[in-house]
Image (cartoon, rainbow, N blue to C red; front, side, top):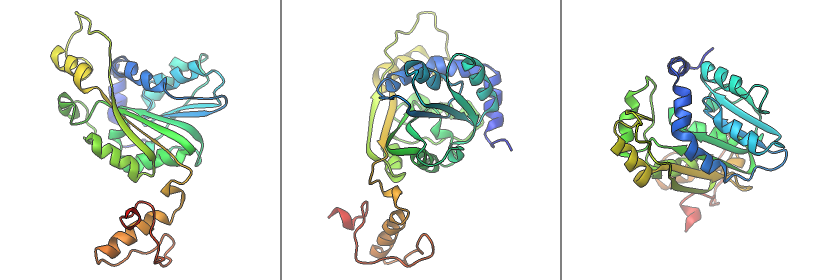
Length: 278
């Protein structure tokens, strides 16, 4: 059964928006992809891959890559991605939502997503899915231009009939931490290309040349990254529950049942709890 967001994205793709998104965003995305140390026989996945430009770029850079995958909910975008890669790059493209990617736990060393995660029905669930897919020590790299500190982006939600989560930089950082990632960091990555004199507007979501110039020189793309640490809380299914139980106890509320309905253990401070931070 097609994903609920597939219809609008399929129509969007048929209008030729996929290549336009690549033109608008891939330059900045490649700056981040160039930071990834993808080694021999390692695995990479792009969540919300569109026409597959990121997976193709990684496969071209690292011909000895073990597994290179792109997933998207749009059948039309995946069809275009497969056509662009056919016979040229060792990549696989699958129709799948962020939250239900058909790979087992700890399948990938590197995960990437650009201009996609805010379309997830539940961005936290999507980030947790990325965490699940990564091997311990693996990293997730997320880029977006759609965030409140980039004021022109506020109008973008009217351009496509799909709900979008408009989160601030601090909110994305907090979300990554809640998903279980360690060493979470954020910064801005800038598109340093000159704006062609004859570029017509609107372009890339920007209504005017001035808006695009301010974005490229003042706001930039928001880049958030995190690592799946060897001791990340999510590796232990009881720790998330324990943190919730301790918070409830301090608030004077009833403690929730354990992961398997078992009792909550007392007398221990867990990572991430206020008690553990004293």
